[in-house]
Length: 102
Image (cartoon, rainbow, N blue to C red; front, side, top):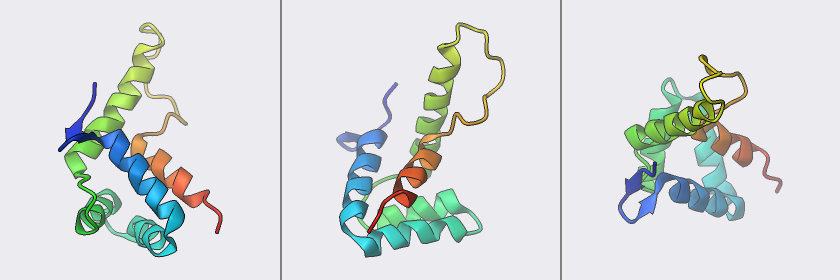
């Protein structure tokens, strides 16, 4: 299932944001700072929107949930609980962002 925001799916928005952050240290730092917020996912989405990236909390959560659900379906009913290490889109985005070298 794809979650659309405007003409792009959330995955494409996150990829574009990641690519832009790889070229702009200021953008990267603004995004990383959101993790220190009391509500990091909301702060991340609010920051994205203020910077012109339409990534909304509901769609981000739904996309992450869909990723996890797809992994659970891939085990043909053998997995009844989420497996540690099967992170969502938000966590994977930040893992990529934090791995960038300047």
